[in-house]
Every structure is written in structure tokens, then in C-alpha cells.
Length: 380
Image (tube, rainbow, N blue to C red):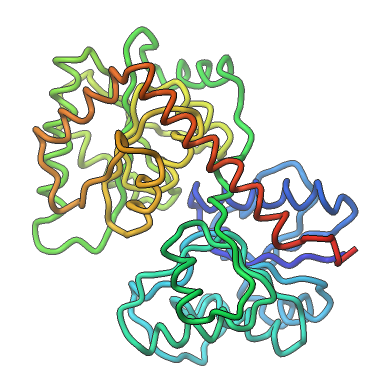
């Protein structure tokens, strides 16, 4: 059995690393003798787990084509891969030259051409702002044998547009990656010289297509909230770049310059997803713009607040009960976000239990990815 996996891998993004980590583990449990091949952007290691996984550079396109020819299954996903943020139009480029949805389409179309089974694994769909991009997304989805999606909105898109497809709602694979122990997590925090006697609040921002002064305004508001939490709640702030790209660190450095001295620590090391998951479990709160800072934190029972730049952030926080919410990045109000932060830091036992029950439900939903896509194990 040969699996070829294609997603946004090898780009240095912790969220995608976490998705791939759990995907490989889940597949390995069902198909222990299988061989796994991951198509990679090759900017950073695509897979840092313990299983025997071979990665292939997307730019080695002749090799990629031969690999797909010999595959039994081509898996596409997970994550929010079908959207048109960077605009969309038909392209003939291959490898890294294929942009937006075309990056995934080049592999999907090849696999379909070669008559391979294609499974979309826990994907998110949208936004799709033009009829042309919507049609292209539908053309890719229509080539799949089965599809799992991680939110109700993506499910509705398929039911409305491609009602004959086999599709199920599951949850993001990162929810179920294994975590390091709390002892190991605290050791890593000590290495970062983080004071463990204080409540820890993680902040994770990301670069985005900000307009005019939007980034500066967001940084000012988040800094105001951080300084308030430090002075009034005895909180130590932990600034968390969630991508190895320097732009993520750069925006966090800009935030750090606006915070009071000795109230924060900016992570300088690069961590595996299971390390970060354990670390986030030691926090009292996470304020996150990167979706997977929220997913990994929530999976450890840590309360979260989303800073939304994409509907997927709202989709996730809306699944976790009335006490968990997100705010559009351009509309963040310092006082409102501070009040919500203190509420979650001091969350009642009843509210904590409700939140944890919601997370547990999503973790069970995530296990449906394998059960639905490979029901009956007809591939064996």
C-alpha cells in the first residue's frame, strides 16, 4: 500500500506540521505496512515525526508524476486549502510555480488522470469570492472518492454544490496529536527563562494582507491588552511565532517593542507541534490569530480567544460553547478583549467543564477522518 499525501507541507507552518503528524499516525495504525510519501514545498522539513516517511520536492515534478502513477491512494489535505485569497485564475505552471488552488489542483488532476483514488482529508473550504474560483474548487472536489471536512460551513458548500459526493464532517487532525508531558513542557519553558510562578498568557499574531494602518492599530490594541493583563492579573506574556518564516517573528518583535519591559518572553526556538501542544497546556489563556495556536491550546483544555482574519477562526471558536469567541482583527477593542481575557483566566469550574466537553467531542469527531475515508478498509 502506497499513500501519497499532498498539502501545504514543508512550508514551516506549525499548524500544517501538526496536521501531517496526526494524519501519518492515524494512517499508520490502520495500515502499518504501508509506505508514505509526502509532497513538500521543501522550504523546511515537512515531517518531523518518528515514522518512516519519504518526502518529495514538489519542484521535482517528473519524480512527483512517477510517484503518483505508482500510488494506491492520493490524500489531499488537511487544512484550509480551497480558497482564493491570493486571487485565482487558470495556470499552466507546475511545482511551486502553481499558485493558490492550482498548487493542489496540479496533483489532483494528475491523480484523476491516472485513475487513482483521491481522498480529501479534513479540509476547509472558502472563502471563494468569485464564480470562477468556486467552479474550480468544485471541479477539484468532484474528482474525489470521499471527502471529510472540518467545519459545518465547508460541509454545506459541498452539499449545496456537489450533493452526490460522499462527505462527512469531522474535525482538525491537530486536535489529536500527542503531547509531551507537563514535566517536559515546564522544562522547555524554563529554557526560555519564563517565570513559572506567574499565570502565562500566550499571544500569537501573524502577518496578513493588512490595509493601510491596520497592522499598527492591531499591535497597539494587543499591546494595551497585554500591558493591562501584566499589571492587573500578574500575567507573564509569551509571544509565540507559529511559522518558521521570518515574517511571523517580525510581527511578534513589533508587538514586543510596545509591551512593558520584563512582562513578556518572545520564543526564539523552533518547536515541534507536540512540544508546543504541551507548552500551551501550561498556559492560562491563548489569544491567537494563527488558527492552530487556538486548536493546540484548546486541545489541552486551555481557554482561547481568536483574532479572526479568516472565517476558519470563527468556525473553530464557535464550536466551543458560548464562553469562547473571536474578534475580527480590524475591530478589536482593548477594553472588551481585556474583559473577556480576565473572564476566561478566572473561568468557573462549570464553564471549564462545558468547554472541555466541547473539545472532547471534537476530538472524537476527528477520529472519523480515518473511519469514514477508509470504511471497510477496502484498500487492504
